[in-house]
Image 1: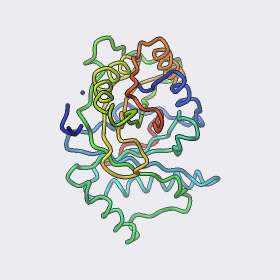
Image 2: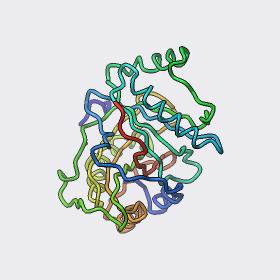
Image 3: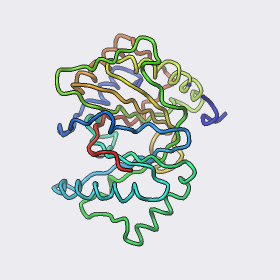
Length: 275
């Protein structure tokens, strides 16, 4: 049965957890008001994820173009809103993730026409690709929610107190993954829905979670996505707590979870939401 017809971690081992978040990017996060961070989507919306990065030495031009591109793409018919994020903690080089990501919320009935509209607008010159953009690092993935947002306050044993001693910030923990084998897909989804999401939401400062399934875009991305929204005063403190809970088996792992092609990162909003 398709997962789209069903209603309901991160890592298979402590070593994988350490590898996934072992390489922090430059500290460029900014404090963002909680109300401005609105990635979770509703049942009649899809999520368009666009990764991008500047060519070496062209970071300022890329940042300026990214702001224009966000506004232009958010104005495309069918796009509800968009928001750009800096990827703050990411995995090793084999995860191949650029420095920034933009989430666009799209009306579900318009997703089949979105590619054609963007292509036509690009040909017309109304959507431009700046010379500062590294085309090899541009990746796009289209996803559909598997179920509504789950709030941490709905899960027994959660703790809203953020970790760390610095300024309070909003963050997202974003993980693309697949089952270890096709035969383990049902076990993978049962574990994710019933065990893993509640376990991760019990990490102090975690606020919500939502799972998605890929329906288009780059085919080398894993099929499933989970987005956790959390508050923290230190990403390193939160990352360490995630690792501790895995090591001490407070967060229960499953051999149905595949680690071979997983892509994961922590991100902080770099722009306001654009509608």
